[in-house]
Length: 153
Image (cartoon, rainbow, N blue to C red; front, side):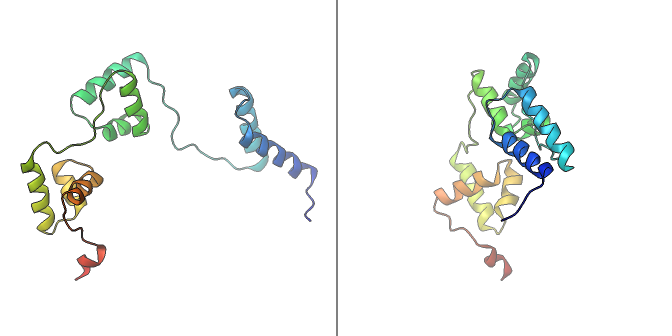
C-alpha cells in the first residue's frame, strides 16, 4: 500500500475531477486546469483549438472550396482539422465529395504510372490526389500492389 501526502491527495482529486467532469461549467473546468498546471508544473498544450467560423469565414470557406481548394488545404489555411471544414461545408449546404477519377483515361493513366515503377505517393503528387485515393482506385481495379520488399530487389 502506498501512502499519499495531503498535497498529493489534493492533486489526485483535482486531476480526477478535471478528467471526469463534463457537466461543470467551462469557467470551473478552466480553474481546475489552471490549478492542475500550477500544482504539478506540468503544462500540456492542446494541438488544435476548436474552430468556430464567423459568417465571413464561412462565405470565404465556401468560395475557396468551390474554386477547387481541397478540404485538406483549407484545414491548413484555417488551422483546424479537415473534419471541421467538411462539417462546416455540409452544415451550409455544400456537397463535399470524395476525390474521384472521372474518366477511364485517368484510371488507365494511374495504372500505367504505377506499373512503370512509381510509388503511389509519387503518383498522388503528380495527379493531385491523396495517396489513399490512388491506392483505393488501383486495388479496386485489380492491380497487384507492391510491398516495400519489392523495392529492395
